[in-house]
Image (tube, rainbow, N blue to C red; front, side, top):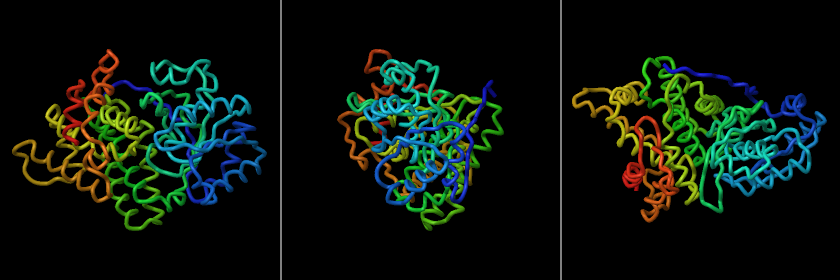
Length: 392
């Protein structure tokens, strides 16, 4: 097990009608906030009215900025930064899923940053200040409600980049599974694939003596898979949605990743799909992950066999050693299919014309500064291209 620091200051307010507490909960942090959200769904559902009433009831003023889309855009972030400075807000309140929360985090750190906030995503340079962020979660998937991470797309350059800082962990997040009842099947499926990938990126490691976090990863994966199918059958299964909502949060607040080297190759590869083709993040991960597994498993047969037995429930012989692993990957593909997820890039509308470009961008080779992608197996651009082609 590796050395680690763990600090998760986010307060989670969980349960039925939890959003009604948002005004009282935010009062110690701010007298004025930016209310940040996506399209019109929160207004149609009545959630917007609930949130604004709660804010007014606690004497909290607000400016607002809607318009966040999946794979949130830098242009709206820059608009939000200007608005926050003009209105002198003290906190950014995101009402939505991971894209809205990621956009809110970018605005929060841009408030104090004197240059172009995109420079932070490009260079990874540390930030020294950010507005506090809070969230009312409407889509369980990204885990951004308690993570220190944000991912933004530069629409002009067709580049998607992530950034992390402890300053970006939300001070509090509201998670009410009732708000998930009206989500379409596609969002459930994409969300499940996203949160599972957050666990895979931590679980598949070459670090040994990680029994506790191994077991936590395995239990969380099984919980998500079981309850995703229950919700597919009953869209208003509060208990199943509760398990999924909690699973999404724990998948990405890094409790499952402490003491172990993490990978993140699949996320790096998928960001190129989203940046160029604007595909749903979870759908892209569902296509790439099984193919990444097939490409790398021989580098550590033991952890993949453990996955096969303890997560996917593969039974039978272990000769040849690859047999249970390949069976587990096939079962994972079947599960994704049951949720309605794609299994090929073609299904996402992606042909082979830009695979080499994306592989070179993912590793930095396109910019003359190649760095291997991932840690479980170091992937050069030719390796990434091979995985893209397996996924085609």
